[in-house]
Image (cartoon, rainbow, N blue to C red):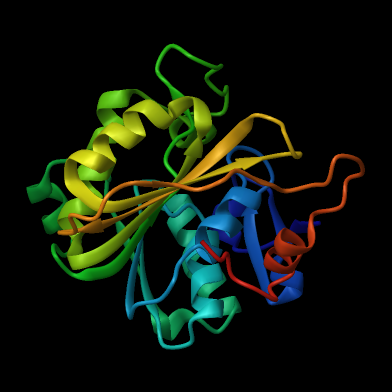
Length: 260
């Protein structure tokens, strides 16, 4: 449903209030443009622990807030270049009683390190770094008409590598980096991860058993030399019907984290 606040935001955009994790989170987000969904929840549920979390390109904060719900001792820093999204992220933190565990930073993830530091983003500081980067690789897919949505869904392989580099710089020694991305963009994503991390683990996600993977979760550890692991693909649904399989239904209802 539409939301009449925050007033400064809805002068230009309508906002909806959406429940996540079976109602454990209620988040405001734009009714048009990029909207958080299953990917954001899966990314947050993929976080295994740690005290300090960094969410690069956080949007309205969904992935980070999912992680905070699951880990009571965790604090999160949310980074985005979209000021309106950050405003909603701050409101969402307050509305869900997470403001005391949340910091927002306005910064371009792909900017040079000096610019990120000047914006307040610390280096070698975060136990876990997560990202749901823009979806479409340059030259593939359709650029969204809405400008905020376009910025959230479009980048080339070189810029994707800058996101991975920013994650590397931000993570502590031994820190964990987790991205979720469309499977068609796995090649540049994997290249960037194996150059910088060890213990790289790839989890392909498909809609139904035997179908092609549409998303991949990828995790690496800074400073590790452990080999790569490719996990078996997991289906969100059974062969028929729209219901989620029990593993994913529990995740989306807030009853479980992703075990991988």
